Length: 104
Image 1 (cartoon, rainbow, N blue to C red):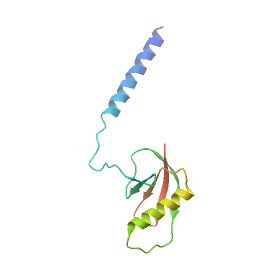
Image 2 (image 1 turned 30 degrees about the horizontal axis):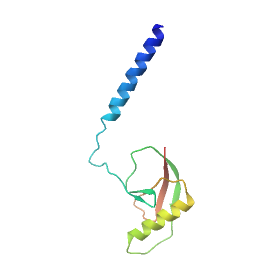
Image 3 (image 1 turned 90 degrees about the vertical axis):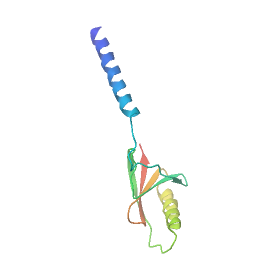
Image 4 (image 1 turned 180 degrees about the vertical axis):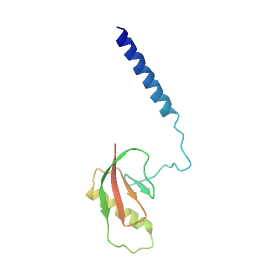
């Protein structure tokens, strides 16, 4: 009986500790909220804070246009075709390439 009570108290203590830690999350100056385009989160030169699974990389050919919005839209559209279950894309310094991700 004592083992059950002791186990319950330890479990309750750990649950309280975890809940208190999560409740005190303070965003840093570098924390931001990204926007969605066509239902996909677009991370440009940044990475998500939440855990995610890497699905693959999509690379488009050279697109010469003075409007980055067109390039973003093409990347999003083509990535969604290749990885339909992607939740977001990560674009680093190379604008013609992105990584498709799925949040856990």
